[in-house]
Length: 336
Image: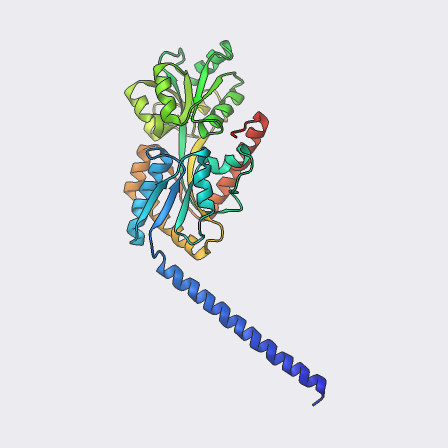
C-alpha cells in the first residue's frame, strides 16, 4: 500500500466517523425536539394583550385562552400591558423566550408602530413569527345625536359645507381609530379636526356629551351606546354589514365605495420558536376558534373569526404594513 493511499483511507474513515456522529447528533436533537413538543405545554401559557381589559382584543384573547386551556390541560392566561401605543406589550412579546409559553396578541399597532415611532426596540417582521389570525373587527362611524347628519353622505356633505368646523375623536395619535379617520377624510376629500384621546373609553363619553362630533371606533367599544340611543351610527367599515348592526349600512355602500378599514387581532410568538410548537399552538387555537360557543360570543361583538395556518397571519400583517405605511408617510403622522 502506498503512503498516499493509506492517508486517503484514513481520511475517509475520519470523514465517515464525523458524518455518523453528525447524523446521530441530528437524530438525537430531532428526538429531543419531538419529545419536547409531545410534552408541550409543561407550564402556564401567557397571552400578552396591549390594551386594558374589556376591549375587543382582550375579549378575543380571553375567549381563546379559556378554550385552549381545556385542550392543553394547562392554564392559558391573559396579561394586559398598556402604554406607549402598545409598544410596551409588543416589545415584551417580541423579546420573550422563543419557547411557546409567551404569545402576543398583535393588533393594529403591530403593523403601524414601526412607521409612527423612532428607534423602536422591536421589529414586527424580524422579531415575531405568525401563529394564527384570530379575528376581524369592523369599525363604525358614530356621531353625537345633535349632529344634523343621518347618513354617511349627509356627514360628508356637512363637512364640506363646514370645512374645519366638525371634529373627530380618536384613541390617540397613530391609533387604529385615528388612521381609520384619516383614511376616511382623505377618501371623502373633507377637512375635519382630529381630537386625540387616551383610548376610546375616554373619547366616547365626550361624543355623547357633545364636546366632540364624531369618531370611527371598533363596534364592540360603541355597541352599547348605539343600542341605548345615545350615539348615532352612520356606517360600518367592513366589506359587508355587521351582524350586530345589520340595519346600519356600510360606509362603502353609503358614499365611499372603496372604504374598508377594520380592526383585527392575530396571535404571534417570538421568532425562533420551534415550528413543531408553533403548529401545536396553531392547532389548539384553531380548535378553540371553531368552538360553537366561541363563535357565537364573537359574533355578538361583530368579531369575524378567521383562523387558518400561521402564514395567513403573516401575510395579513405584511399587507397591513404596506397599506398603512403609505398613508402614514403621505400624511406625515408621527406618534413620538
